Image 1 (tube, helix red, strand yellow):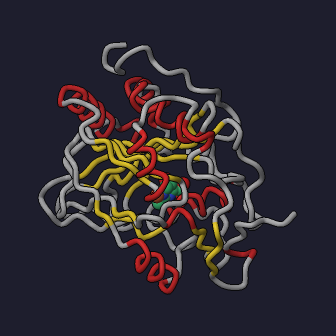
Image 2 (image 1 turned 30 degrees about the vertical axis):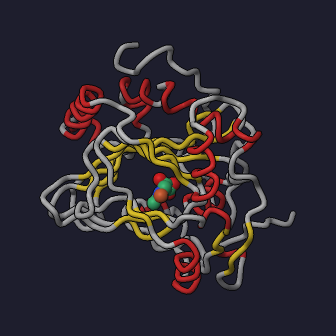
Image 3 (image 1 turned 135 degrees about the vertical axis):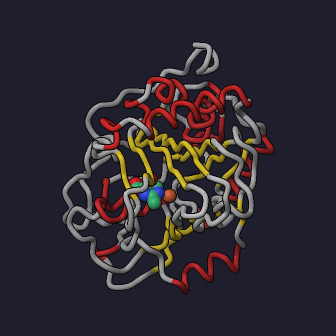
Length: 304
Ligand code: 6CS
Ligand code: FE
């Protein structure tokens, strides 16, 4: 079957392909979380920032959980804990919605989940969750990529009908490696050259080298849309469309950066077979087997 978003081993060279799917499904009528202005910003730019959606008490409760998890030797020995490429420093913890009850509730907080339901126009489930750490002085970068490119090839996600939600657990400023996004880039799919090595995730989650867009395509996207670095207070939330080009620099400032990352996928867009002859990635990176539509909490994740 023809795949409009063929990439890596299935293409000879890099290419820019026009997106087929809508950005906002069902015209945003499925739920009522974003204002008309926020919805149109999301549709146009491929992301929207909601400043200080969570208050200081909520942020502190989440940071406390992070401190506990980072000191939990049992957890650090698990596959879900990803270290940096060149040290034993913790880079990410995956599947946090299952490993930690408070983060499990955070994923169902009405302030977040109704945004996902609204833009995806359906019920949603969690495709992936993680916390990304970027400690002061030595935090490492995330090179430019589209998440959808990875999820399409490595996880068999059929269409662009997923949204990522990054909840800032520390202030993100110009110096501590904030998320950088290319406005408007979600309207084009950048097919990447190069085959995917077997068990690529074991390397790519530390340092991504496949599914990396070529420099000419990046230059064109940035000529069209520029680059926006999101600087915002802890408790702010960035929603970005699954195909929006993004990345972030290392952190040599003394200020740590940490964020919780939840990926909501439409119940109409569940995973198929991975491409490029790959075996499915483990369930803790890509939910394939055990999931159900997420039920919103009745109130804040801290209260419920
Ligand atoms: O491999 C993945 O699924 C992911 N990798 C990156 C760098 N961003 C999104 C997603 O967590
Ligand atoms: Fe990403």
